[in-house]
Length: 72
Length: 222
Length: 297
Image: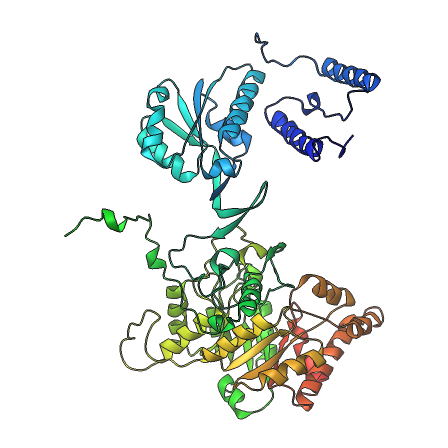
């Protein structure tokens, strides 16, 4: 949970950078809603499922970007 | 270090709007430290430009490289073979680096990605503040190591203006009043007499524009 | 014709100056009216120099208008817009027109005004400007070159101080430099707390310089509170704010005039300082009323 990180300040810093990165995405014409940070622990499977479903909904709603898929 | 910040993305994008291949060149010195134009920032800018171009249905090939520094010819030469493959070069160095790069590759369009701001220090992670105006006529010996030229917006040499505001500057409560800092420091050091004398006006003639310095050892002997 | 300001200063009388703010534009009717109204009631009329960094008519021609009207102008000169060449040539120009009273100021910073992107000059500061004037009087320009020909300019040199500045020590250090650099008179930033001002004067009396207390007309309790919160170096004590607030509706200005008049009278009767500089910003027409309230008209 926020502030309760094994790496002390780690997830607060991650939040800061995620917020910053949302701005970078917006500048580049990519909806910043495509990126969101959630705090949860490894034992929270139901919560994890919820999060995945939430983000899937976001992606569906926004539709595809024009960016070409590249082979990984 | 020289502190800079990245230009707004739209401004950079507009510079290279008609390009298909750009080389983004970072600098490993000051602007890396101040998180404006180092390797990481090169990656971010390249990714953003690629995304933005693709979103508009265009293609951009953005090459990435970061040099040790851009204010020395020996490092700039490292991209000699690469440069020709690109329509333009975006330099993420300070203004000095941009110019030196443009001078070496003078048949290439070279664009600046940063706005160079000041000579300063890292207050803490992610925050920098100005400390030196490079006036060429240092007064720090008398002012307790606090520069009135850089810290006071008016660069006053003979004490504070009437806008001292509880030790802050009238322009912003975020800014310290340089002369309050100087007074307090000298008071602590028992050196207030340093600033009782009238400081002469700055010698702007020492700021030869453009500045040039040759090390004593390298001067041609008569 | 008003007597020379310098003469008035040296006569030992309680000196009164007021202020004329040049307009932004070429309609000078209102300003001329203020000059007419004030010129014979005061010993000098300050002409502000792009006050608050807002572009207006320049000071020198307005000083000339005051002279033509028979008044005694005090040329305010800031270091914000002119370098050492421009400052000196303006001083020489002022002198040949007979404008010899100069108030040396640093000047507000550019960004507080209406041309925020202008290049701030601040080549000299208020202390160095005083030294510059002294140099010209001695026949030498700032760079040490001799002035040509016969005759030397002479000026009556002034400066300012902010007695309520916080912290006060660096301010006083600069005040002392101004006197060392040749200031003959000092007009203070607005003062309202007479006890604080008396303490300042106890200190200032050790120097050979005429001190004129800055009197800024209060027009409402709100203005007093605003200045306390937003204008560094101005402190309006609570009892004055309460007094302003106690005024009946529509009578706040009259109350402000009464307070300003009362303060001036106290300063004069108790011989606290050598004069007053009355600033009725935007209400220049009320200065005669203030002087009347002080029993000076």
